[in-house]
Image (tube, rainbow, N blue to C red):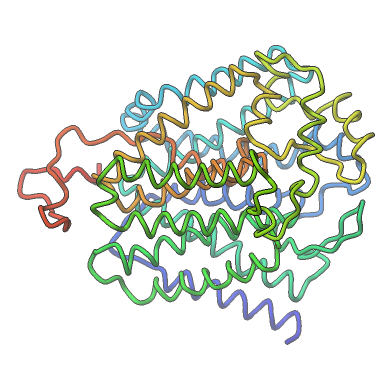
Length: 466
């Protein structure tokens, strides 16, 4: 198949899956296209990179500090558009903000830390983008039909990113493949910039399609239309192929973990028992933390096809911990990997040229100190408590949220994803942002565990159209 024919074929495929996935029964807000655009850019490449507006001869450290004016304009436009949408929903947004005090405190501390950053302007710009992530998540969760909005967000972005990744890898290798400038190793990146980027595209959107399919077959609801099942089945198959192409062990391991949690939480009696949920999640996290961090020689890493040093990550961890930062407050929001510290690290690890610690928790410590770590832990505990409660009154959405929450917790053991514009961070926010429970509700399940619709004059306890 020639390149031009392949473009037409994949364009037809994308249009087909969009048409198959139509759901005339739900009416999500048109404003949802704003977070779709935001997430699609974050998960792939910036607009300037797609248009070739980034000079490859400009040093990476300069790019990190200065950014790109076109990308700044695009992100600013999306943030302003998102704020306009939220203003029209100000009552619901106000309720959400009151329910998410820990997250607001964490974000306020992040902007406060700009004051002691060596690069306050850069830190503040990055904080604005983090606010943009939160704005996009609020657009989704304050939609009149939030569960449908989550489905549409993941489906639309996944349909736009996964098939083109295969197209670029197979027919446009100059865009879809790359080589390490230090080791010369070849890798596949698809629409992303690197193999790990391709891995989290397959992780986030593959998990979204798997969630849809598992809900259809295990969720206990009425049979779904055939069209969406075909669309998500095709995209899931493509995502599995991309896992193989990306060779990202972290993403694939997280995908298996998240998919397993969704399946297990489809057992209603287990999902409605908080102790059982805590036990399942606790066992998963303990096994992973022990095998990856506490005892790398236990065999878990080798079983994933990696060496016990986690491809040099342990050396990076030791080096950054030996560098001087304020242990209480850190270097300032997203400011550790700038200036002289970055130069010093690259001088000793030139073959890796890292720009992150490859551990989200360590990265928070380096940038925000123990105060930031404590606030992040509080946000996670607050969000997890809400997700477990939601398994009783909004089980369909809560199953995906629990999977995203655990996936983010595990993913950050070997990658830094607690950062602005990272798709795993956005997925974490979708899970951790507390959705206020309806003030009046009836039990959504009868004694047998089957869904019981609300009677006349009753509120079911599930999200309803505002």
